[in-house]
Structures are given as structure tokens and as C-alpha cells.
Length: 52
Image (cartoon, rainbow, N blue to C red):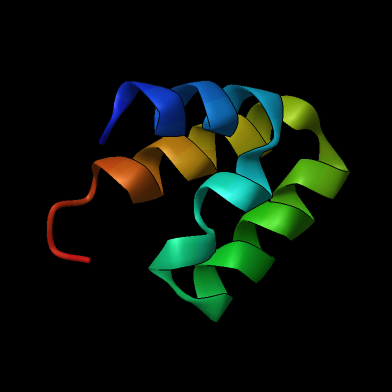
């Protein structure tokens, strides 16, 4: 995970996981709509997953 992806995950989480697939984008988007903190946490977890 690069520094700029982490910054983008804090500012606008759905955009930071756009390269990880459509499903990840929608999951993070829905969590972000429910609250900023769950969206940021989900984005950081997805970005830190080395398998994807």
C-alpha cells in the first residue's frame, strides 16, 4: 500500500479501492454511506490484504 493510497482511503475510501475490483468498491461505498469510520477501516483492510 502506497502512502497516497492511504491518504486517499482516509479522504474518500471508495475511490482508493477502485483498483481492487467492483465488489470491494461497493462494499466500501455502502460502509462509507453508513458512516465515515467504517468505510475508512474497510478500505484500509482491503488495501493491506496482500492476496488481492
